[in-house]
Length: 156
Image: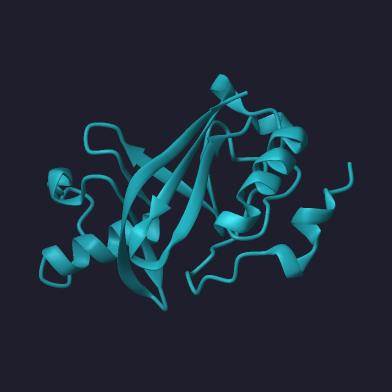
């Protein structure tokens, strides 16, 4: 299947400065949460392209607004068998439901390092309430906290 034009055309792509890590094993994406960055101008066409290209699990997409730099992110789960590649400006994230925190593994490691005297310890307990309604990711290998607010929920 050929990617829709909006996902191939770099003129329509968001150009944030975040560290977009490409997963090594595309087949190991079972029930992963995707997070695609965009601008308000490209939001509707991105949602249309993603929903026509992928089988979105739970028939929901969440659009979050990042007020500090007027960015938008669309979060959604994609069925594994439906993924042959990942759209540009997309990261894989994990979510802590009780605090509504999205985070990458790299950001979690940087967070733990900062809170634990420079040591990454997988047993270190993060108080997720300090990171309510935000996305934790890395930018130039440093942790970045982006505070979010739900912009809209899309029912497919």
